[in-house]
Length: 134
Image 1 (spheres, rainbow, N blue to C red):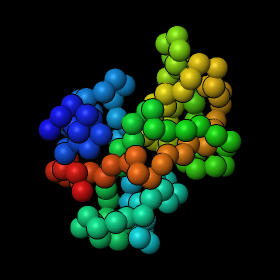
Image 2 (image 1 turned 135 degrees about the horizontal axis):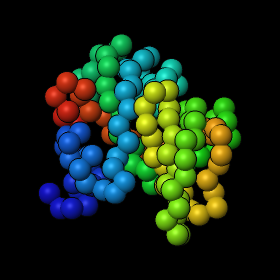
Image 3 (image 1 turned 60 degrees about the vertical axis):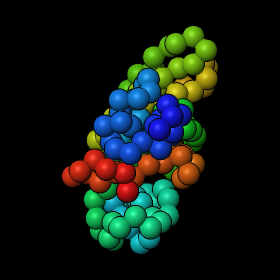
Image 4 (image 1 turned 45 degrees about the horizontal axis):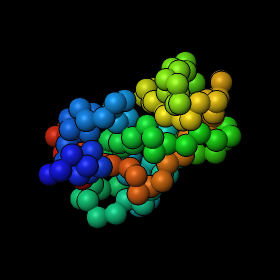
């Protein structure tokens, strides 16, 4: 595929992590009640992909597709440190035990904790065993 296709719709977890800087965030998730959930928070409708309810999956999200908001909104995000890049900042932290990087414009990085949201259309599901896109 084209570089844009590979970046936006990677066929495997390896490609998702290999292309892009910073790399795509990959975190453990579960299929629950017709939705994909991370740390018990439903993020997107499951859609047709073959994973059954209760199945473990991996959820991928690009750092530039994530949004930081007030604590209690979306996923609980704990800020560890902020990397200054000039026009942007990379906010490094954790959701549950998973490391997550969020790209924000300079001056928008929170300290302490925040809520993490993402457009469900900008998420990717991977099989945790094979790494294939679901």
